[in-house]
Length: 553
Image (tube, rainbow, N blue to C red):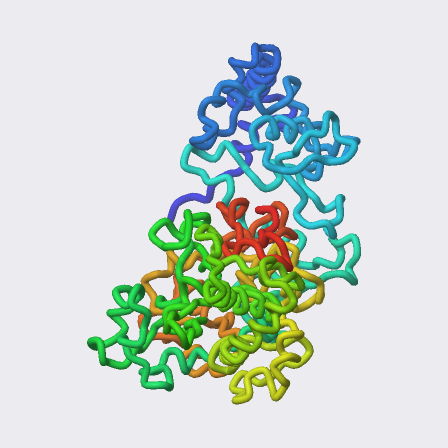
C-alpha cells in the first residue's frame, strides 16, 4: 500500500502571496487586451479622419443592388460626422418620415411623396404620410423600416411584419384620434385565431350590399339560353364571331362564363391601353359587354329602318332623339331634305325644339303624321324590354325581377323622370369614395381599394375557386366577394390539413403584411403600381363629368 502524500512539501512549493504577482501568461493576456483595444480605437479614429471614400471599412455590409453605386460613398446617405442620432432626429419643419439628414438625402432620389406646407422650398418628401390619423411621434424614419447594408440581393421594400406590428399591435395608442379608427385596433398576423388575427373582410363583416343602380342576375346570365332560349343567331351580326365559342353552333343555346363580360385591364384586352397590367378588371361597358344581346333599337314603320338609340341618356334626351329621327322623315315628306352632315346620334338639347325648321303649325302636322310612331318607339324603349330591363327610376326602385319595369306610370310621367344614378359610398364612413370619381352608375371599380390584389397572377385558378357563390347569385345587391378563409387556404403557413377549397391547396404562399398592403399614403385609393393612370374607362357623362380615380399610393 503506497504511502499517503505529504501536503507540507507541496505548500512549500507555492508562494503564499502568488495572487499578488502576475505570472508570464497573465502579463501577456493583459498586454494583448490593451493592444486590441488600442488598435480598435485607432481604426475608428482613422476611419473618422479619413476621406469619405475611404470609410467603407466601417460599413456593416454591401448595399442592395440598386444602391451599389454608392458602396464606397458613405456621405451619399450618411452625415460626414456619422452622427446617427442626429440623422434619425425629426427636423423642425415636419418631414413625415422623421426628417433627419439621412431622410432628406433619401428624398434626393425618392421624391415620390407630396409637398408639405412649411417645408423648405416645398420639398416633396420620399416618405409620404402613412395615414392622416397616424401620430407624428409614431412615424419612423426611412431607415427605421428600410434596412440597407444587407447584401446586393436584399429587398428594401419587403418590410418585416414586426415593423407593422409596432403600431398595429395596439393602434389606439398610435392614432391622433383613436375614436376615428375604422380598422381593427390589433392585427399582428394574417393566419391565426384569437386576438391579433386578421379580421374578416369588412364587406362581409359589415354585410355590405352592392350600391349599384343596375339590375343584374348572374345566375340567369350564366345559364344555358339565359332563361330565354337565347341562341348565337340572335346576337348582333357584328358580335357573332366574338361569341361563337359560347354556343354549339348558330342555333345552339348561348351560355356565358365570367370572361364573356369581365375583362382584365391588360394590353391584350380591348377597351384601351393597359393601366394596371391585368391587376384589376375593367368596368362593365354597355357598348362592349351588353349591346350584343341587349339592343336599344326601334323600328320605323314606313322604311323598316332599325334605329339604335344612344346609351347613357336620360328619358328627356331619349325623347328628343326619337323625335329628331322621325323629324327627318317628316321634313323629307315636306320636300325639305335635312343636311346630310347632320348626325343622327346627336339629338337636340333637352327643352329645345327638335328642329328649328319646324314652326308650330308644322309641329301639329308632325304629331298627326308621326305622333303614334314616336309614342310607340318611346313606349318600347322605356319598357322592361329595353331601359327598364337594367335601370331603376330615381325614388322608385323596383325589384330586380319586376315585370312592370319602371312601374305603371304613364309614358309622359316616365319621360319627365330620371334614371337612377349616384355615387358609391364607403361601407363604413358612408362618405363618397373620392378615389372612384363620379360615375353614372355607382358600381365600385374595386371593392377592396386599401389592398393589393392582382388577378393576372392568380390566373391558374378558375374564377369559381374564389367566387363560388356567383353561379347562384340572383340579386344585383350580392357582392360575391370571397371571404378571408378563401385567401388563407393558400396564403398561410404550409400545413398538412386539407384546404377548405381543394385538397391541392395546403398553404405555403406568402402571407406577410406587404403581400396585400402598402405603407406610404395608406389612406389613399387603389393600392399598387400603375394606379396613378388608372382612369375609369366609362369616361364622361353630361350629368357627372369625368370619372377618374384618386391619387396612387
